Image (cartoon, rainbow over all chains, first blue to last red; front, side, top):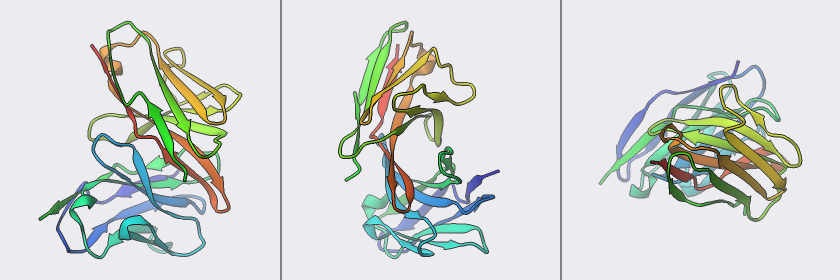
Length: 113
Length: 117
């Protein structure tokens, strides 16, 4: 069975400091992995996607994620947080083609001025 | 590219009426679209998978007669909440699947807030 665990429900950082949002997954197959961001009362925006091409994936707005198979992790990072980064972040697994996405429960990122 | 729109963005209706929500892929064609429901401070819950030209596939526990899905073209899927009741109040989000060289990616609409009085 496929599952996604976002290890922190809430992360708070100061503006200008690094961001780390943790995600672990389990999958019987080689999955595709995604990070999406959701601002209040908005839909989800794709930040980045891993599909086995490269383990370090660069996304939009300065975010990156590294796929570590040995640790079954896909943590999201950003060197310097901006106030506009405050939002809900979802780690998502696509186990197989034509199967539903598996969502993590989300991590709320707060950025303090 | 890969923009998905939803209309309306919010709707208030009386109990017992039906509400139609449209989901459009604006700059790509989507054979497959998805409908999700999101409760406050929770993750997305998949309601159904909508395939162009065929019947939708509903997730367990989702009433197909209550949530009617029509995927009449490669750029439009509609969700109709029939005989809406206050417990149907929620945030409904659609997504459209774009196939690429490195597999499929779902692009999400901005969501529709439904309030049933």
